[in-house]
Image (tube, rainbow over all chains, first blue to last red; front, top):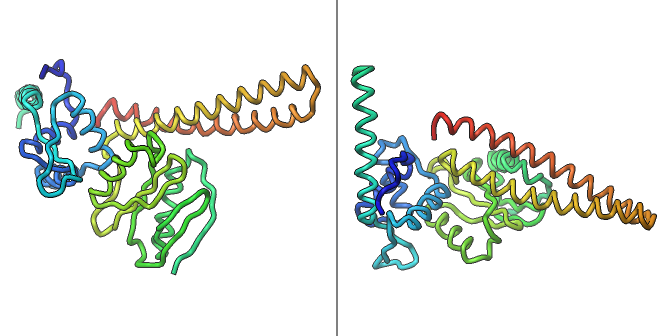
Length: 105
Length: 180
């Protein structure tokens, strides 16, 4: 169920999944992704919303009710999502391995 | 002080509309309300807000759209209002750059939404135009001819808009082959 047929994740999806190892709401995800990528990746709200809906459908993330403010939905990665992340990391490592081997550096 | 202006933009020129609203904001006129062909501005600091337009999947009053609008608001933007399915959002420029989409895929999806809307509207007008043209030839009603010409002109115009957005989407799709 975790498989995504080895297809590459988009950068946004990769970082969203990575940011959801602990529960966050939409704005929290945007901030975390921006800081993780050293300010390089700024997720726009509409793009994030679309990605979250798809990830929920796939069962790679789930919603959790925030304690204080139930209006704001919080999201959390699922086991399936973790498996997808691991698979993607293996793929990225292969890319890097081949790049380093051939191009060096 | 509030100021109201009336202006018309074609649906396929929504980025032109955003640019115009940015130029108004640069003059200290920040958008605070919209209705059909009507823009309400409040006077304030020049360039205080950036405005973005989005064609929603459903009418703004639909629960799905309401949920989306609330999500956008929770990220620090304000929902200014809407005209039919077009929603207007603004965000303070001192909170950083404001975009609704940050990758090519979601830009393409937005254009797809606009293309299907234009397609339906264009087809309705084309069908109406042809139907009235037939009515004119069968019954000889000049009224039918007038309606037919009007509908065909409108469908031609919508067809032009469709092609504009279509080629814009094609550019994005070509870019998508290289990167996100």
